[in-house]
Amino acid sequence: MDSFHANQCGLLQEEIKRTASVLAVPVFAFKKESPMPVTIGSRLPANFGDPIAWMMDCHRRVENFLSILVKAGALHGRQLTGEERHPLGAALRYFREGAPKHTEDEEQSLFPRLRSLRSPDIKPLLVYPDGLERDHCVADRWHRELNQPGVQWLTVQTLPAAEAGRFRALTRDLAHLYQHHIAVEEQRVFPAVAAKLSADELRLMGEEMEARRGLR
Ligand SMILES: [Fe+2]
Ligand SMILES: [Fe+2]
Image (cartoon, rainbow, N blue to C red):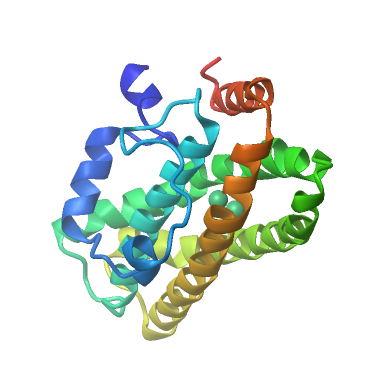
């Protein structure tokens, strides 16, 4: 269980290294170039004792695996090489199994606590959770729609043009959605929660996230 525990969203470290080396080209301008006015946590792998840093690590994982899907979309459904199949399969699996836990972390552990804060300077931020939850619903629908041709591609080696076109369009739509979504969370929501929640509340949040993954 240690290697599982060492990773933020339920993926093995070796798998992440393998996938990152093949298709994970940096397609996100926001990943390193967007302003990050508040830095939370260290660059070392986060743990459940720092739930905000943990969620930011999950965002880096989302960006990594989404970049794999975007890169795959640009292949237009052609036959995959052996080196291309593994990262595509890993990315599809991540968005089926790992990413939904991050969504639950936010919807069940983070947003309710943000909404419960009574500080006047938090009030302007309360507009964000509703929109972020709508983004989650849209992203979930698009990932489900994308998974089917993705699995088909892995199974039968190539994708017909129509499915390949839809796959590519969905990856681009998802990239745009996540770019704005992650920026709002990291620049608006996370810093406020980190600053305003008590140490006890942050600890409880981390414990909930740990339990969500069956690690507690
Ligand atoms: Fe989110
Ligand atoms: Fe998030």
